[in-house]
Length: 82
Picture (tube, rainbow, N blue to C red):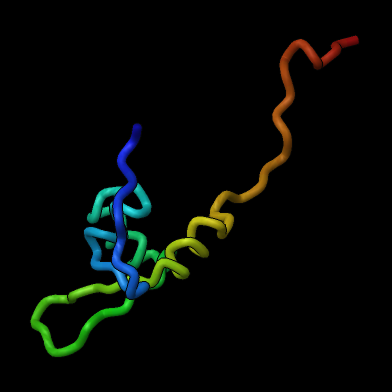
């Protein structure tokens, strides 16, 4: 049986917990914050940024479409030359 991770019930996750929740690396998560793909909350009063994340924000980021739709591809055999 696969083991399910228990995430905090407070609704707030650390960067490491949020990255694990999304199944990505922490560096990728921090890049996504800079790109505006994910909402992160920076805690004040520290020299370095300490980030916290809400599960709802992470879920909505996953559901948002970041892929630009394109024209459907055609198969070469579908093209008929006359």
